[in-house]
Image (cartoon, rainbow, N blue to C red; front, side):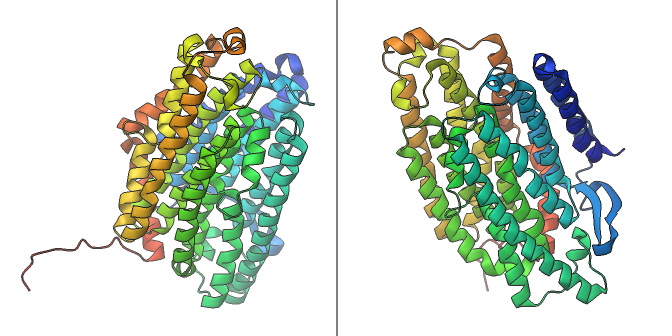
Amino acid sequence: MAWLTLLIVLPLVGAAIAWFAGDGLARQVGFVVALVTLGVSIAMALAYAPNSTAFLQFTEHVDWIKAFGASYSVGVDGIALVLILMSTALVPVTMLAGWHEMEGGSGSIRGYVALTLILESMMVGVFAATDVFLFYVFFEAILIPMYFLIGRYGGAKRQYASIKFLLYSLLGGLIMLAALIGLWVQAKQQLGHGTFDWATLSQLHLDPTTEKWLWVGFFIAFAVKAPLVPVHTWLPDAAAEATPGSATLMVGVLDKIGTFGMFRYLLVLFPAASLWATPVVIILSIVSIFYGALLAIGQSDIKRLIAYTSVSHFGFITLGIFAFTSQSQSGAALYMVNHGFSTAALFLVAGFLISRRGSRFIEDFGGVNKVAPLLTGAFLLAGLSSLALPGMSSFVSEFLVLVGTFTRYPSEAVIATFGIVLAALYILLMYQRSMTGMPGETVRERVTEMNRREIVAIAPVLAIIIALGFVPQVLLNVINPTIDKTMHVVAVADPKPALEGTNS
């Protein structure tokens, strides 16, 4: 069965139906289509064979532009599978949680729903593409619905934020396009014909200098998308101005395209260059961990604070990828999923708070625990997951990243560990300032308890956060075989433990 094509087409069909259904029925249509898409992705996941010797499963191939070897080729490995599951799970959650946020901005409700479903289609496509040109098409096309979701439905500075988001992403994409053309030229020289097939390109023998330049072109695009310092500045503005639902999908899913691209393309297509660039990437990762955390501590805007925490978290993810141990890379892949759900919980609960109080500023809250204990509890659970408390999903992934990094880069791992202390500071300080104390008059009047719709929306996300904290093996069993295959392609092995006291 053409699982991936169905997952790409179904939201597009739903977007068209929602548009013609009008504002009155668009939300209901969009939510039902998102639920059906989630059901299809779960069915596909149940059919996935983690121990298969094939690198990719559910592959489909149709010639597209024969003139230069582009095709509609899709398939998933374990990492792509869990990211597609996460994406399709978050879309219905954000639609239900933001049932009324669709009414804001300068756009229509049907426009919001249609754009969100188009975005979902593009998200599945970018994780499923195995033709590098097709990947680039999805990589760039995904900007369009997000640009309009920010620019038409966001906050007061939405035009500035959407244009900044678009320009940063387009610049990174154009640099990647230049590297993509260079890769096609290399294929034509070696094979006699140009191709964008990912598996074929992985077999090319590139000149070391050429490989390094091509690696840099792809890396810049992925670093912007991730985002890594210093190409991160678009994220706080975009996340702050987007609606909570759109911010959830942007930070929870779209940013993972960058780190997914590092796994799928940098490591597999340019293994030698990836090893060559490792020291620089590790430095950038550590800088991102501390820079993001320190700026998060100083934020007064809840949504900007959450955005800066993500800059810090992505530092851990890229650190795990480029530490080149099976533990660190498994932790990085798992971290992408866990971060998606914990960030979703934070943004959605923050959205509930902001819609009630009418303000994004932490100083305008205080004492929420007295008037809305359930809302406070949801906010606390989301925050504890973000700071990687044991028992929460993020703890397992962060622990694997740090332990795996320590076996190859002990000093860097020790330095990165201090980022956990900063995470505790920015989360607990935000909670203390916004949730505890005596509520002011405005908080007492406006901040009410979560309603049934909001509880139904946030409960599955919190349940997943807790469940993956205790049974992460559900995802690791799918992720680990892909990590092993990737490590084999890069030709690196885990460091052997030092044995003391052995007789020579």
